Image 1 (cartoon, one colour):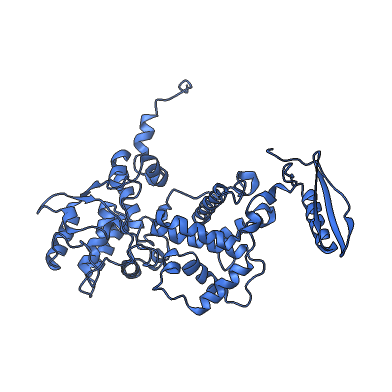
Image 2 (cartoon, helix red, strand yellow):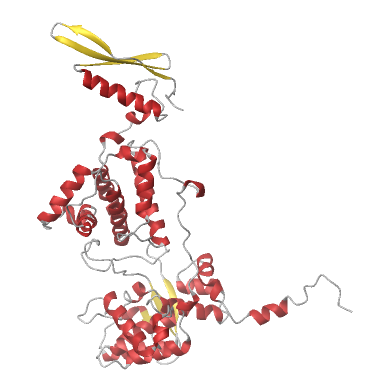
Amino acid sequence: MIDGTFDVRIYNIERRTRANGYTYKVVWKVGVKKHSKTYPTKALADARRSDLLTAVKRGEPFSTESGMPISYSSKAADTNWYDFAVEFVDKSWPHFSANQRKNVAKAMTSATIALLRTPPKQYDPVKVRTALREWAFNSKRRTNPEELMPDEVRVILDWVQRNTLSMAAWEQSDRIDTVVSALGTLLDGTVAAASSVSRNRRIMNLAMEYAVRHSILRQNPLPKGKGSGGGAPKVAQAIDKRSLLNPEQVTALLDWIGKRPLRRGPLYRAFFATLCYAGLRPEEAVALHVSDATLPETGWGEFIVHSARPEVGSQWTDSGEPHDDRDLKGRAEGDTRTVPIHPDLVVFLREVIVQYKLKPTDLLFPGEFGGRLAGSVFRRVWDKARAEVLQPHEYKSPAGKRVYDCRHTCLTAWLNKGIPPAQVAEWAGNSVPVLLAIYARCIVGQRDNYLKQIYDVRYVGKAE
């Protein structure tokens, strides 16, 4: 322990007579060194002595140099959690992607609610969370002079700032437990998804490390290890086999989408076929331009995938557009990957380019008004197709419930056709370990061959 000891003795208050009355002296001893402080009233002296006694009872070490509890030497007691959280968001904002910014705001909102002195009963809980997430922890909106903060939001945030505990709360185990619990609980009191809990705890660890670097806290207070209650819940990497579509279902879905009464049916069919045939992520498909695809009149084509445009929300992106401009997931800046285009998909894409008179610089899957295809639009189309094509029990099942399941279906099909995992990983933009962790349970069809190969592995004689 640096500059600290548990050898502490607190003496009785000494009253001193002065010309204009009395003063009261608090005396205590830390190790072999005595310390004292004089107060003009007995009440103030009692308060200081009580604080010191409380620190001793809590088992806090005292600094042999200053004579005060070690916790007093940090900035924790003088730093408001809300102010700290806002500062952390502002410092991190330029270095985070739009999606990370949004997730940080969500985590900070949950932690702030847990660190209020009293619940905000006078305000709608949803409005409080919205004010924190969309304004307090959104640097872009809060610091933009053109963004006028609503009066109701300003009132709520002023109240939150006044009623938030100091960073010293992170030195109290019961408060830490409260925050950790809040990070894993939804507004309605139900348990959040394991992936959300893990993400929130990673974000809070970043905030705590920031506090340590700036001498606000002495150490990261978040619990670690399985036995401490700090271990994040396990997130299932392997996909649910029930979410995969069979070839007949994919064919029927694409056929129905292509024949939709609306004039954009062929474009939506080509979009979903790109996920089902080429295994692209939705955010990669919406970023494709016509020039990114090589489409011969017959045979196989090729995509050069070089960017992704995840839809996050205009309030979180630097550009003010709903889609964030990102490099490929898990790849170095400016990196690309090539993906083969199945001949059937080549036909769909060539049809779209001709029908919509697309130029090489145009988006391959433009939105209805020329911008990027919105996630809300293609998700609605996909859900409608599932409702029309699948049987009622299939529609209610996980089969193809998410648009992303089209990619899962494609990658699983490649693996089941015997394509080496390294090649599938290259086309998919995954590492081999991640690929196998996600899809290993879905590789089928080779069991009989494997059993034949190990049949001769025998350790007993033949039965007579």
